[in-house]
Picture 1 (cartoon, rainbow, N blue to C red):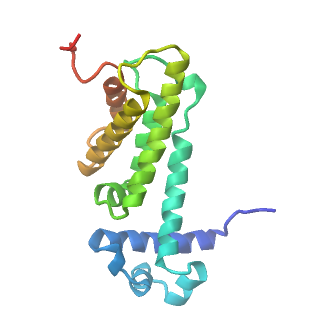
Picture 2 (cartoon, one colour):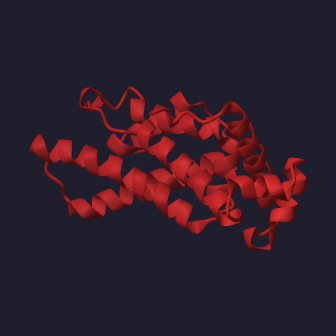
Length: 197
């Protein structure tokens, strides 16, 4: 049985999603009405209710789809894990590329923090990839100076912080450049000569 969505339905939903995003840039989500979403989309309320129960369902579908796409894009592949500080990690490239593809959405959700639970969900996805990388290191008998859980929390928060900084500053660097910087920060630190060695 096919689950493919009719292109007309996809276009209609995209119009409602775009309308909601536009309104969220301008005002608090709680103050947005279905009427405003319909007017902004140039569609009518009856059409809206054919697709969604309410604005919360529209938002939830948008967030779920974005999170699933992000989760898929940053899945850790065994062959990609290498101890190489000079080359940008493919996962980081895919992560920043996904952010560029939906930069308006991510700026609204992460920089403006319109939906706090979305930020936490993104952090959880990043934590998962950090935990996977840590698992490889543990299997390779790499010793940690700090508790592994603390290390994972540190890196996940740092990665998210860098992503938000990049989005907030209008993505001044390419995904490849950003990926290389995160790879360096994760391995040798930000210094040319580490003053602590």
